[in-house]
Image (cartoon, rainbow, N blue to C red; front, side, top):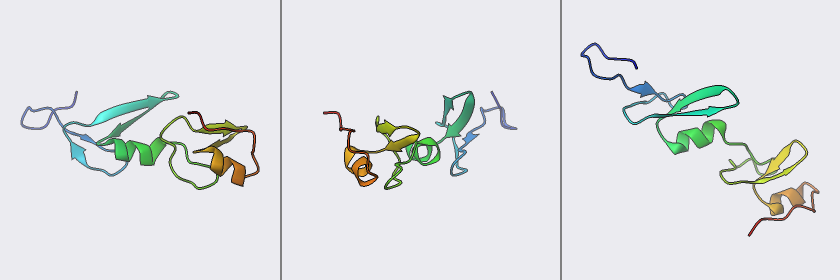
Length: 87
């Protein structure tokens, strides 16, 4: 744990926006670690992006080969017709 010059725990800096925040959190994926001050920053930094519309995929998404899609509609626009949204 880092400490400030006054002895209180130091705030961690968000890797996405640079904000110092006392309630920051860490995310680990595939051996790499990031520090974020909000889920919004975490999503912007590390969520996979839809191969068609480029929106961040927050849920499960759909995969075909190396491509990820946010929904079956976007997959179909790329010619991938066999994928279905899960209900």
